[in-house]
Length: 113
Length: 115
Image (cartoon, rainbow over the protein chains, first blue to last red):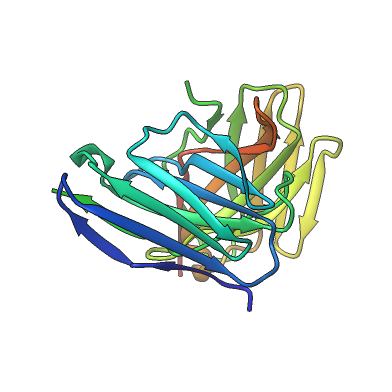
C-alpha cells in the first residue's frame, strides 16, 4: 500500500462548528505532515509529527489542533475557524522525517462559511 | 518573504521538445531540493531530487541541475510528452528552528505540453 488517504474529500463548516480531518498511511512511515494550500499558492507547512511526537508547529493558530493517535494516523481538529481558513489541506508522510521525498494525500477541500 | 521562487507561472512546450522549469532560492541553509508534479484533484507526487553536494541528477527523461553559487535549480524534461502537463513545484529542505526538517515549496509552474 503506497497511498496516503484523506477524509473527507470536501468539507463545508460554519464558524462555530467543530470538525476533524483525517489522514492515514500504511507504508510504515514515521513522519507525517499537515500543509495548507490556498489557490495559486504553494503548500505551506503547518505541523510535522516525527515518531508520533509533534516536532514542528509553524505558529499555527490554536483553532487548528493536530493529533497523532498512532504511527499510521494523523488528525487535524478544527474549531471556530474563519472564512480565510478555507483552503486545500494536504497530509503527507515520509519514511523518517528527514529531508527526502514526502508522499501526499489528495487533500481535503475545506470551505468555512 | 518567499524563500523558494518559481517566477514563471506557466510554460507551454511542443510535444517532443525540451521543457525547462526554473527555480530560485534565497536561503543558503537549504541542503536538499526536490521537484513535485501535481495533477488536478490529486496531491503532489515526488518526481526527482538533488542533494546540495551535487550539481546534476538524472532519472530517465528528467534531469535536475543545481547551481549553488547562483542559488538556482532547473528541471529539464526531454522529450516532453502531453502526459507531462501538470503543475510542477520546486521544494527545498533545511533543518527547522526547533528540530525536524522543514520543506518549503515554490508557487508552482503550470506546464502545458501541446501534441
